[in-house]
Image: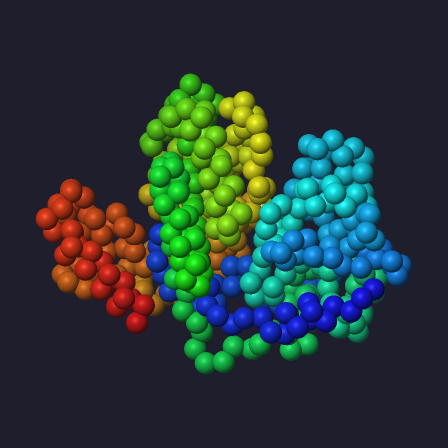
Length: 424
C-alpha cells in the first residue's frame, strides 16, 4: 500500500481558523467541537466491525473527487469505506446482493458516494478532519496512525476502515496531529432558522452563505425543521399529536401542496450538501412543557415519519441525501421543554438541545448526556430591557410585534449593538 504522505501532511497542517456554525440563538461558547464528540476516553476501543481493508499489494487509496475523500480500490473494485446510506442507495440502483458485501464495482461506489467530501450519510468532523458515521471515524487511515493503533494493542481492528472516533482522536493527539489549544478558547457564533416553511428563506439564506464563502468566510446555518411542512392538509389525519389534541391539528398549518413539499425536500438536500445542519423543531409546534417522555417519544416518531418517509407519503420520486443519524440537534417549539424531553433526546441519540435560556455568560455543559446550548438572556444596548437572543424577541421588545417601518433603522442599530456587546 502506498504511503499516505499527502494525507499525513493534511492532518498535521490542518487549519486552525474559526468556523462559524449557525443557530437563531446567537450565543457564545467555547469549543463547539464538543457537540461533535465527547472528551477522549482512554478506555475507548477501536470499533470491532467487519470492515477490514483488503491486505494485498494491489490495493491502494484513490481520491473520490476534487472535494476530497478517499477509498480503497484495485482499479476495478471498491473496498470501502461504506455507509448504510450508500448501501441503501446501492439497493435503489439494483445493485443486488453485492450491496451487502464489502466489495463493489468502482462505478457503483462512486455513484452512491454522494457529492461531498464525506460518504453519503456521514459528516465531516472539523477537529479530527475525518468523516464520522454514527460514532465511527471512516478511513482510510495514514500509516503512522495505523502504527500508533497497533502500539495501543488495537489488534486486527487496526486494519479496518472504521475506528471509534474517541480512539482516533486520542491517537491523533498523541501523534501531535491535533494541536493543544493555547490561550482563551475561540469564539463561535451559532445561528439557526426555525420552521423551514418559506422556500424564499431557504434560498436567500443559502445564497448568503455562498456569497460569504466567496469572501473566504465560512458561514453555515442550522435549520430546525417542523414536520407538518412535509405533510399536506389533506393528509393531516396521519398526525395524532400528544397531549390529548385532536388528530390532524397543528398550530402552524401544513404544506401548501405536494409540489411545495418536493421543492422543500430539494432545499433540504441542497443545504445538507453545502455543509449546513438539519435539526428538529418537532412536528405541530405545540407547547410540550407538560409532556411526558411517552408524549415526546410519540412526537419524535411522527417527525421521523414525516421527514424520512415524505416522498412515499406524498408519492414523490427521489431520496434525501442524509438519514436519521444526521439529525443531531433539537429546539422545542415555544421553548416548551419538560423532564421527559431530555430522556427522549438521550434515547434517540440527539447530541444537543437549544430549548432553555440562561445568562449571557453561561458555559455549555452536558445534562443527561445531551449538550445544553441555551438561548442567552441579553440587555438591550439602547433601552436596557431584557431580551432573548431571538429575532422575534427583539421584534416584540421594539414594537410589541407590530410593524413600524419608520423606526426600522433604530431597531436594527439596537439589535446590532446588543449582540456586539454580548460578543465582547
